[in-house]
Length: 444
Image (cartoon, rainbow, N blue to C red; front, side, top):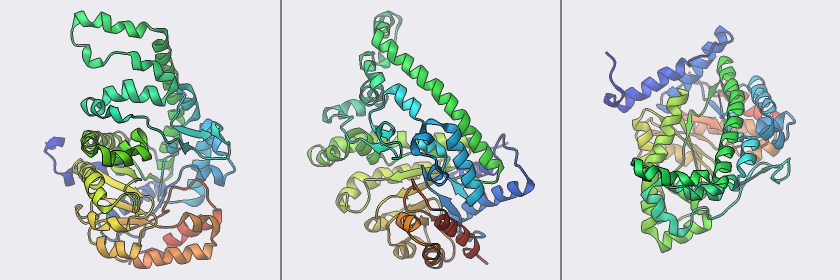
C-alpha cells in the first residue's frame, strides 16, 4: 500500500512529483520521438538539479513578449488576442527548440484587466503605447496603518481593503462585511444587506464577467500547454510564488514606503512577513500539484545587491525566503529562483540550503565565484545578458556561452538561460545560444 502524502519524506514527495511530470495526464505525444524528447528533457532537469551530470546542459528560455516580437506581433495584440499569442509561442518552440519554456500565461489578458479597471499596471494600449510592454505603477496600495489588519486576517484584508484599491470595478467591496461575522442565523440577514447595494452588485457582476473572459482565455493557454508537451517540450514552471518581503514591498506597500517602514516600524514589517510566508508556500505547492510539475518559479526583486544592506537582508529578506524555499522542498517541489540584478553579496547565504534541491538563475552575478561557492550544493543558471542577445553577434553569443559552459557547467549543475526575462529578441543570437549549447554543452 502506498504511503499517505503526509507520511512521505521530502525526497519521496519529489520523486512522486517527478513521476507525474514524466507522464503528463491527457497528453498524446505527436510521435515516439516527441515522447522520448520530452522524457529526456525532464530527466535532464532532474539530473542537473541533483548535481548529477546530465547528458548535456539544459536550455531554459525565460521570457514574456519575446515570441510575439520575433513574429511581428505587437505587445497589445499579444495581450488582446490569445490566438496570436499562442501562435507565436508555438512557432517559437518549433523554430528554436529550447528544452524548457515559460508559459505565455505570463503575458496576461487585457480584457480581464479592463473589466476590473486594474490600476496597479499600465499595459500596451492602456497607459502605454501598443508597442510597449506592461509597466508597474508604484503606489501605497496598503497604507501604513493597515499592517495590523493584514496580520490579523490576510484574506479579509485582500478582499475588503487591497482589492478595492487595486481594481476600480471592485471598489464597492470595501462595504461588504467580514465573512468571519457570518457565524449564526440571527446575524446573517443584517450582514447580507450590503450585497443588495447597487454598487456592490455591480462589482460582483464585474467579477463574473472577468471570470467568463478568464475561462475563454484559459482554453487557449491550456491548449497551448498540451500542444507544447505533445511536441516534446516542457514548461519550466509548474507554479509561481514570491519572496514574502517582495509580496509586501512590491505589491502592497511599494518601494518608497517599505524603505521607510524598515526604519519606522520594523516589528510590524517582520510580523507581516511572518504572516505572509505560509501563504507563499501554499501558493507554490498548489501550482505544482495542479499542473503536475514540481518546478516553482520565484522572481526575486528587492533582495538584490544595493537595494538593502547585508544587515537588512539578514533581518528582513533571507529568513522568510529561506522558509519558503524549505517549505516548498519539504513538499517535493523544486524552487527555481530568478535573481534579477546582482547577488554577489548574497551568495554565502545560499550555502545554507539542502544539497541538490533547487535552481538559482543569476543575472549580473559573478558566475565563476558562484560556481566556486555553490557548485557542490545547488544548481545555478543564467547570466546570458539581454544586451548581448539584442545587440551582439552570433559569434559573441557563442563565445559567451562557451565560457559559461567551460567554467560554470564543469561537472554539471548549470542551466543555460537569460539573466533577465526577455520582452524582445533577435533570431540569430537566440539560435546561437540554444544551438551552440546543445552542440557544445554535452557531457561524456
